[in-house]
Length: 374
Image (cartoon, rainbow, N blue to C red; front, side, top):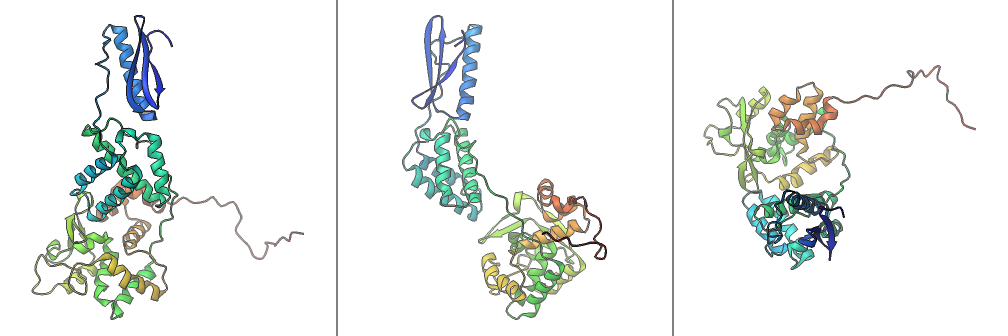
């Protein structure tokens, strides 16, 4: 080891620093598992000690360099504290995912301390979870654990985050095709003509026409409409009976087409109340998305022999047709509440679809000859 340099070593599966100063040997035990992240932290500590030795500011008691004492807390207790912190910050459907992950965390880590979780241990948990869940779900759960440790680090409950470098490979999935104009017309007509479906006909047409998120459509109240129903304000969402701000806390006002304007005017009764829902279930309550999909949407598509796509695909359909018609992506993002960058990333192929170069002459059935292989 060169004079004046500090070496990073692994001792009993933990990192330590080793160096000499004025003929005396020193070791500093960091208490951190060997990982890429922890080696970076150890390297920073080593450079600090080297600089102090060079400048005459070295502390031979090592008190200046010893890491802060990490509070002894189990993985299960830490994650429980984290999800209690998240309880009022996320939707009930999202919180249910945290509760599901808590069961897996308790089953795998039991009473183990957070100090024992190295990057290797984190990867073992990932692989264990992959035997039970789909890759996309595993990645989502690892992101949750990474967020938990980042929160705990700010609270000084842990010193390092072993989840930062844990990766989950998820194979890309083909995006469902948007409904064609013919399919849209057939679906709306089916809902209008079928006595079992017609209660939801306006709801279906409005979702197609405005590209609303499911929760946004369920949350619409008459006070969200302009006086003559030519505009509608979208700033709230409804999920499992809970009303909250729209996604990313961003609202928007959408000018409606004459057809959609007339649709709303026809629905609005003379004695309507501003806080009445625009679209309701048959029982007069807020529309439950799962119930609507299973009891009405799926049977309608099946009877029309249209390939099944979720009701949410009405949003994808509006965006796709808008882009294909030449609308400005920024304008579409403003109408649908998308982040412009996200819209470009997800719909780049529609905005500016690449074309293959044509390497062959135009096919001529008269002059072209079929070649037979002997």
